[in-house]
Image (cartoon, rainbow, N blue to C red; front, top):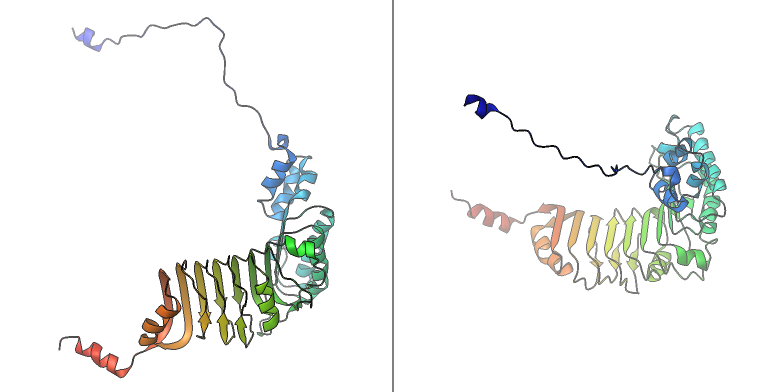
Length: 333
């Protein structure tokens, strides 16, 4: 009986005498993909890494050069050289010029140049902007951050004159830093610009007002350390603006109308700000350097931002004596 309990019943084997079909994976390699798909993949890589892909296949030797997005970062391009030296700057310039030469007569949708400000780079700014124009660039970023340890900020002049009506209409994103620009008399604005980022840009009140008034499709706008020492009044409504950041901005007053505004960020001293009717405003962050009273924060801010749903306020407050006595009286002795 014990042997019956421990006996293992074997399942009968069924044999199939037909043809056995084995499933195998198709051997598809990157080199077999179409050129347009390869270009899209390479556009997601840093330029230096995209150039290295030529070791994978001889077919990729030319594919990486038609990458629709060119991003040059000094730390990436010159990672093997000591930062800040003449050799560091020269290698960056040579690399940018060499790649642009290989991309002549090609469409480059995005061009990003990020490098610490250096006078030796200034001689090439106009050439790089001209390349962006001829390459029908839609997104242009010239991020030349200040590196002067003594606090002196040099600026380059952004060449507006070479921009014709076609290149102006083509731009969707424009980022400028450590720059100055002056609009020509017949400038009609950037009609299709969606995002505009200004950092340490020297511009007059009139030029900034005229430019914003003609950016009718602007959705994202940031001004950081762009000192007007005057008021900014945008006459034409910014009907599509959903994001606005104003930081460390020396100005006396801001008046604009952004009915679609959803996010508002402010850093700096308190001055009059009129955003018009903003029923969709959800997120507001205020970092105010001026000394405030609690009464001001509780009475004035709700009037200025009546529709805001999420408000974060950083500020230094002063308490008046009656309020201090009222708070003290509320605690049991």
